[in-house]
Image 1: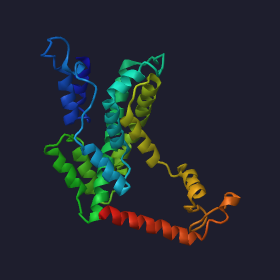
Image 2: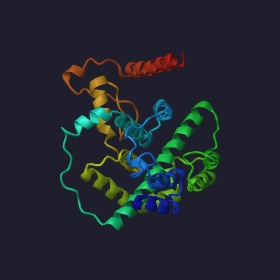
Image 3: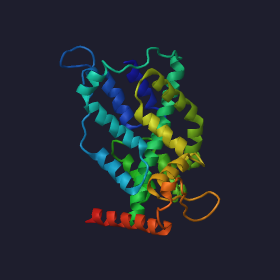
Image 4: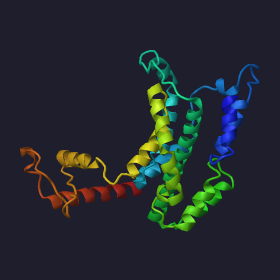
Length: 286
């Protein structure tokens, strides 16, 4: 009942949405089969799926559009489906033995802020996927209009879709919803709450896949420089894939060891990489 009241209260704030609303309703529904407790506590923790999440992640991968929040949610469903394995694992694998003490009021405020920030990241990834497909197939999709249509009747409808629409009306070429001035300001205000929630969940051994994935998305996107340079150096080491430099133009390959001396002409290798990509694309189209 307390959780239901919290979600009902959140639904009167910036978190107002269909899913927040029905969560409050679900939490209050008493079990009409046994007449004891609530239905949600009797529902098997094994999530079904029809395939839309899988299709979304596949399309994101095809477009090279990062969608970690959506992917994490899908993976959580896959793991939930392994109920028998999880039951056995619970008797073998240990979690934290001590739970950090927290202020309940602060925790509720932090969770509210974390949920809103993660929702922004989730919608940003969805919009980027639509934009990526639109650019590839010349659909000329109006992202602001997408947000307006979703308000008309969709499980992802939410009050802040009006603000998403406004962001794209103001700047149709917006690189990412995260850098819209209004949304960026809200993320900057809420990110510490978000970090506290994810940290607490980890410390308690409670999975929070989409909250954590969204935060990683934010932290990766906001970085001017990433440790991806090491990954690319590894790719050049094991596959001769070459790399760009920060101080010079062009493609480079390093003779990391004596075994790399006979790797061949760099230009030819890059052409071979491109040819392989083109061949794979033709096979996929066929």
